[in-house]
Amino acid sequence: MPQIIITPWRDNTELIKVRAQFYPPPKAERDERRSAINLIGAWKLRGNLPHTVESTALLCDAVLNDDPNKVSTYSIRATYSTAFCRFVTGLVDNGQTGRSKVNMFQVATRIGLPKSFVELRHQATHEELPALLVLRQAADRSLRWLWHYYWRTIDERTGSLDDVDGISEQELQQLKNRFRDLLRVYKNDRIEAAKASKKADVVKTKAQDATERREGLVQKLIKLLKDRETAVKRLAGVLLEVKYLIPANRTLGESMDHALLLWDDLLKSISNWQPSFLRITVEEMAVLVIQPSKLDVQFDAYREAIYLWLVHILTSEAWAAARKQSFTNYASVVSTCITGPNHWSLKLAALLVRLKQDVQDRYGEVVQLALGRQESAQEHAGELEAIKAEVRRFDAALNQVIDDHDTDMDTGVENERRGSLTGDPGWSKWKGPWASKPIGMVD
Image (cartoon, rainbow, N blue to C red):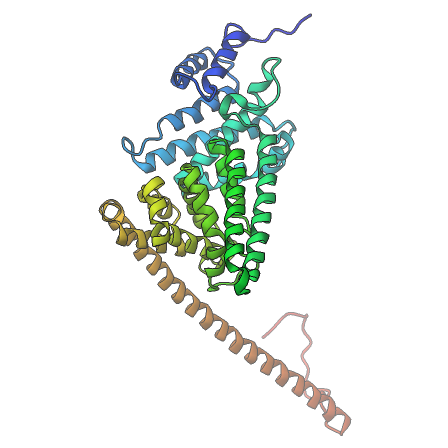
């Protein structure tokens, strides 16, 4: 007998239509996600709505309400966090198949959910709300994951997520590998050109050849990007891996002049051909600056390097033309910095507040408050360290007293032993009257 499954939609065709509204093709004439969200609201009242469908609606609703001009940034972060936490928690709860609950990471691994989702869900639930850029990226990744996990399986269609942005996960990985290959070639070429430039008779020819090769490489990168924002994000992510923009084995306080000289021309060339590249790269850098660190972030050489790149790109004359062409939203960088305050993010925010009057008008007081809290926290940390040092000194003194006492006891025992050997009577029998009484009784 066939199994009867009750669904809130009439037939599979209606569900496929909703999928097309959530994941429209790149050149769709209208954005119908709001209609799909309203329809799912009605389905919810009918019951038996799959968690994946509801999560898609909640995440898309958060994306559509992401308008800092109409709603406060804090409200937007709260909306994203609620949708994301409900998405992750519901999936993990549904994955609990045994009698006793298992670790969320184990369930996530079993169903193919990225562990970073569980970590971000924990942060959003138990710590400060994540930064807006982090939540935007998480929502985008979640919607892509829902496509592969659920939506593409509802009919005979298989393959890539071409309906979203024309690029599949497999192609993204291939793109990243291709980006790494091209960047490796560029880096080696620049190093060789720098060595050859020491020979005066070949300086002009080598410089011209290097410029031509750089422009050729830029054209290869642009051809791979195809004006797709997801691909641009992947390129920015590869550039920010250690050994490209960030030198390998860099130490705190080490100069970044060599890295700036090596990569600056390439970044500006890409920005000229792909206007969204500068904005996306700055956003990716800002997100990395505020990420938690295994070290004290103040002594994290990687985050210091990212901070120095941001200062260079956002304030130097070398980038003035590129900024004028494709980057004006300094306020978004400051907003990200103050939502994940640490040594480097607040230092960057304070710098931009001083340089940009509109940013100062909007965020000046907030940045000063955050800096004040940081200074207060550092003072408290200093006081705590002083208290800990005092406790350590007390423990050392106490241990010394205990050692001295033990030494005295050992000396007394040794003297008693020696006395018994040299004729000291030590213990002796009582020779006076003796009143017998039960053990434990006293007068």
